Image (cartoon, rainbow, N blue to C red; front, side, top):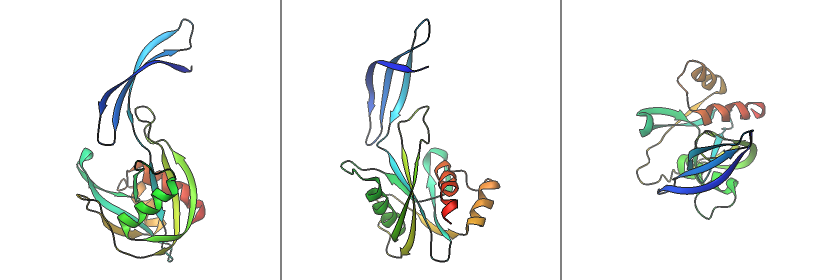
Length: 177
């Protein structure tokens, strides 16, 4: 069931996402050749920031691809030259929420869309938070909300929170909360 890449070509070079097409061979008898198209993503980080009172900091922001305002955990892409995902997580937490954290727990990685993207997300729990000022990117508008774990789980179950990285992050962080 393994797929061997026979050739690869770049179909589109974007600002931070590329689009590739691979000709592959599947190791069946007889061999099968096919095409795979996918997005090349630099990877990203997700943070579950927990305040001293146990509440979790979430973001509300408009997402153009789905034309909705949604709840999300803080997250961002790994920029060129960033080698350490934890360093990226620290940067993103401060930029998007203004918070810095004294304690970081690595919760592992997830593949959000392995059927059409190379994206890998590194998830972290951030505790011992200290408030500061948001430093949002140009064109970014993020409102912060704080909710208890129970409130978040209710919003997940009633469909108010549908973001996959947020649901995964809450699930992975739950044992530490």
